[in-house]
Length: 207
Image (spheres, rainbow, N blue to C red):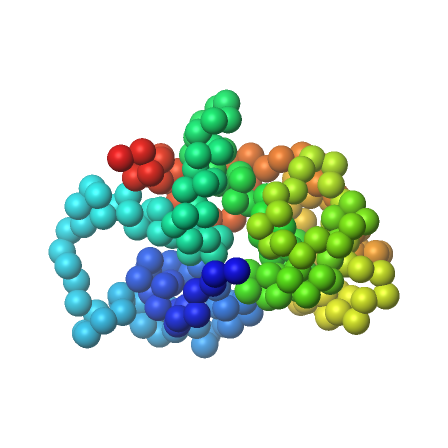
């Protein structure tokens, strides 16, 4: 599985907003974007007013970085979104939000996307009572997600959720007793985690 191994905080500074790539650290005063909000590079060099192409590119890069996908995989999601009925931009963000690693981050079972992927890759979670070790698995309406019973990470997952204030996305039902998550429905546009103009992303991918 391909993954980004470079400095994550530089991605947030380049975008000018927090992408929460380093979990709890991003919520504290230690977050580099709190100290150095300027773009990375020598003296925070500014390239002047961005062109329309650059604006669309930055919006697309923000989505890819937030969900941790590379260009080839992102294009596959876009192709699927264009074949679905409705708004292509909303369809694209909804698909990305329904990834299993994104779901675990949304309900607070992991503090970051990288932590969620590690839990899934190591086989600590089940979907519909079957082990699921693919982070890019797209959940469907009615799916039941839960940690493996008697798993060694069960307590750490519970503590992570408690530390993050028991987040409860409206399209997901969380049972705090056994840490199971049921997909009540598919998320709608305003329920996705990343704040971006999806129209700019569609314009960039349709060029």
